[in-house]
Image 1 (cartoon, rainbow, N blue to C red):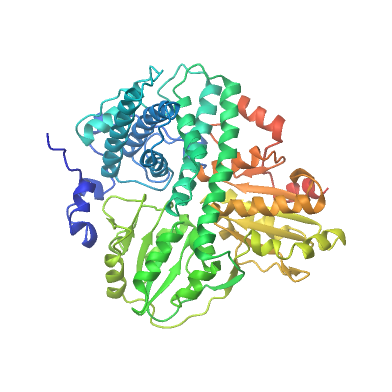
Image 2 (tube, rainbow, N blue to C red):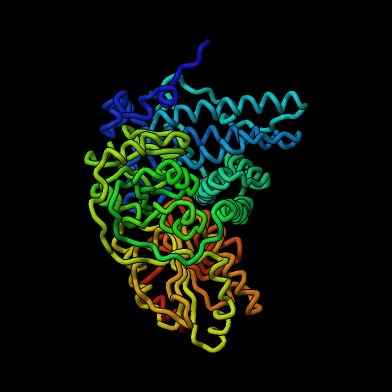
Length: 585
């Protein structure tokens, strides 16, 4: 029987996929959900920091996710659990499949906040997930192995239509087991969201062919463990911390991939103004996609700008050397993209997470690629960027050069450690009193102004390290220097948390202490699941006294929080003045 061709698979074979969105049903373009209202699945999502009322989104996500997409994501996670059970059994008979390994991480990535909103995409992912699961089950049996699980994730048959899949997904939501111990559920979800973040980092690294079998093994073991009703609080907490440990390896691999391809970041001044010419704006996190855009646009009179988490890419020397049309940075963090994209006079490419519902005014100018998607927005192949180039040439671009200052980037671990002698000397002669790592995600809550005020109030004898899009609360601040070292050091993307860890580890060796003995404080802002994975990595390193904000995760129960407080002294932010006083004594 011929397999039904879903919309996304159809688009892969169609010129419409790269020239427009004419065949997209209007019901999806308007952001409405599939099916009649009475058939809508119950929605519950609390995986991000800005979840509704701090408890959970039940009608539509703060991110714009509809109940239908939420149900499809929940169903995909359930099928990935089944695939993982089969993969765990496969390894017992010496079968590890690279396609399954990579698919699992890519599929996890698609369920992160602000990544994939296209229901047709999930239809394809669900189909592939079940096909890979059934194939692995057959291979395990052929090798004489067995699968010891009674979970229906191992036997689930998908409904034959998108509407049917939406209804089916309603049975597998985050709260679909009402009788489960709340603390067990809390740890399961902490593990799940950590695995989502780790899966994203692993997927980025795999694009560079940087992979680790141990990490793939853990991701499958962790997902499979969520179906094991014998897991108690102690064993789940151990898995949560192991997730943090394995995520360190994932970030290390990603760092190796990026620096191997583009060189170690070097301190670089990035213009915030514009240059006369046609324009392309690249947002998201993916350096390989940025390189492809730069390659496709060279010698065409197009100037390429970064947005959001792509800002640190200007510090990679290979990109700057190869592409003179790689110019500057436009805008700030993800949550401001609607007003910023609305004013950008060129084409826009979203390469990974952080997309928001586009305004009609620029919807025809924005493209998605890879894991990211939005209904009604043209999704283009990573290997065919012609539609993006054509749109940039069609649009006016900038008519003149403008100046708006510059910001410094490029303070990865190699750059910072190259002046380690100055840093050590500064601490010893007391010209450097303290280090603050103020990093993480940005967002719309007014309480996030805490991070701006905190950085502004850090004493002049302290250094602020920052990474991820949380920096946009203060990235243009002029804090001065200490012994020739800028007081504000941009370590990079959230993907570059490995660099911050390496800097801390190097300092422990220089001062013959552990991380908790350093004059170093972690002030973390979180929003989505990559940040969860990074937090788990810090805990796995045994780092204590982390201040987390602007609010604590809704999926952490009081009892689980109590464990984290007792073991790591994890605490919420309060006010900049009180926190600085407590830190500096």
